[in-house]
Amino acid sequence: MKLPVIKTIQKTCTPEQIETALEVLENISEAPSLKEPEIDVIGELISNLCGALEVHELVAGGMTEKDAGNTFMKKVLGSIDR
Image (cartoon, rainbow, N blue to C red):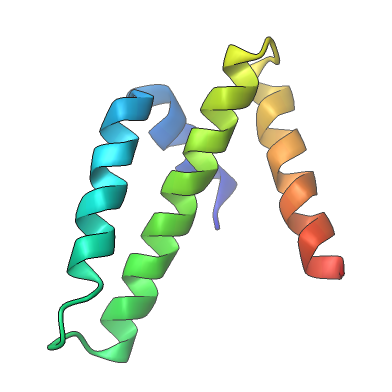
């Protein structure tokens, strides 16, 4: 997950666009011909899109974009520490 990528997606895409991209990537990820490196890239993209959706929700709830990004990353880092 990369916060600059998440912020760019969040600023330039609507939640509906992000959800559509997620559906496409999830379907593509099930193709039997994919190699492991390709699956890794798709997984990274899906993670960034999910992060952007969560940041969208935090902003819609009243947080600034900066605070929403920081809150999201703290949540991610907190889940890694466990």
